[in-house]
Length: 88
Image 1 (cartoon, rainbow, N blue to C red):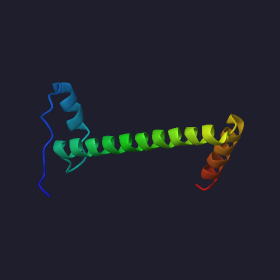
Image 2: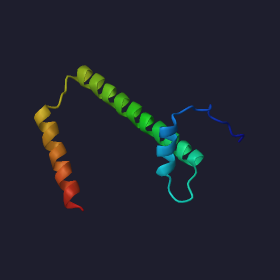
Image 3: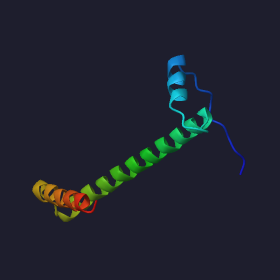
Image 4: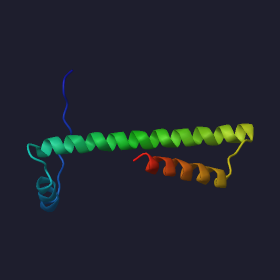
């Protein structure tokens, strides 16, 4: 597969210096930018999927008339949190 490039990005000298200062050993600025873009894409995909699941759930609840109370949801989340803390 042929590679492509991202457009040039103009930044302030301060931003570039801040980025250069946090590079890990052997890491390049280009590598850091590429990884940041990949992580940003992943976060946005996860957010879009989360929203899509929520909208489907909303539509299913409206269609079936079956809703979960806030109290039951919070209770279940608290149980999950306690279980996660217990497994550490």
